[in-house]
Image (cartoon, rainbow over all chains, first blue to last red; front, side, top):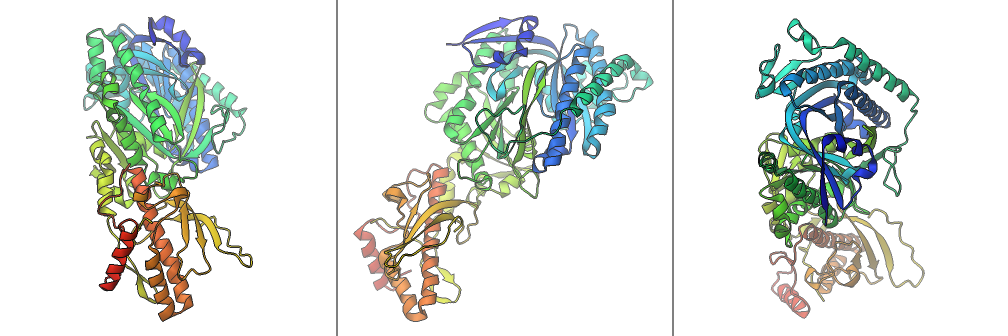
Length: 485
Length: 154
């Protein structure tokens, strides 16, 4: 039986600097924090193709490692802390009891970090630069450690995931997005739906107070010292496959497969209710149980998996082909196999009884992506780990990681759905294509009910057997018809 | 067949054995799926169909799925093989019969294996009723013979 202990954020945070804290244990220590959740998003061309080309792979991993180290040190200068690193996206927390007073701290941190990234990291990125944006929201979040994916700190709360969603929908480079309720009175703000955008790169008279030259200069110095250290790093060796004792931090893995991202559709409501009704400990128990779900999946899907850190209530997994199976073979059936398997856990073989109390009315929505040579990626990824905040953050870089996330976040997706990019739909076995419907112009989706009946649907299309002509021979081959002795 | 390193035959050999990876594309179906197969071909191949085993873990060793122990595949009735291959040999010569026999064997094996594979992926429990197959045992042979008498031997 698991025991739970609530710690204040100040007592909790120092513990997160130790890897042991994230190991599976009978005692789960959690915390909650109120403050600004700030996300920073560095956009590179590199991640799409990095895993296919050694030089670009090296550059991509170097830049992301330096970006993580710089962001971590810069956060420290502004009183913020790194909660999670998801490759190009970094999630900070700036604890605060006074949102109106402390908003200026978010603005100053964002402007100093944005200028540092533009002035120090952008030149190193060169032509692969696509932009840098930030987003922030204020509110409570509960922090739950997880051993999954090399150890991660799962933060649950509206404020903890809304900025990530806003960045996913697009924020202009050099800007910080804030919800209307927080930023609508800021001078120089421009509207963007329910959000406003503030230019945190170029000060104008109205926004001069958001810029702190001394802080920016300190951050830039930090960045330069990180780059100086990284020049001593030397070349990296990539591992071509998994082996016992492989350390992603020392030897990043270059491999091929498919990314799965599963989001608990409807769980936000449970989180909101928990905060409203002061039932956070119940929410922690509930979500700790939910975090067992991918372990069931690993057992049932029967393929080698690489666990990736949870991103809020989203589970991320990299799936590799079985022994003697190729990526080409796997991607032609995995959306059906893994999609059904993932959802089936909640429904089949007593699943509904097992999972109903922890999932409640929430349902999983699943995105799966691989890519191919034409679209890019071809299933290639780099799995690596970066040090920051005294911890180690496992990240996956590659087309499939980004596209699985985009697929799962596609507008209109709901619980029990499975979504794939068009290119992955095209690579499906023909018999499975009718199970997937068009969604927008870039994705196709199916759902658990259809995938469960895939046998019937595929069965109908395979109920054919006909004679066949052989070139140069007058007798046709008979229609295939097996027998039993 | 990929991964196949040719055939060695000793004098007096009772069969030739090949093994390797067989791509399962057939007819209109294009797939990357490969299956590890082992094939025994006999000197009297004109009247005895090659024995084929599939060594993949997804093969159902189940008579309803036309596969026996070790992945032995019942992919063509012996009588049908003899009739068709023998017919081509008689009318169109040995070279044509060799090609025809190869095509008949591999096409039927691919057809059967692909259905096993899709059955495995979709967790089908039984061989669907609308998938063609001869009745089991002698009933199948009788039906085949009846169909040849009626001139419906396709």
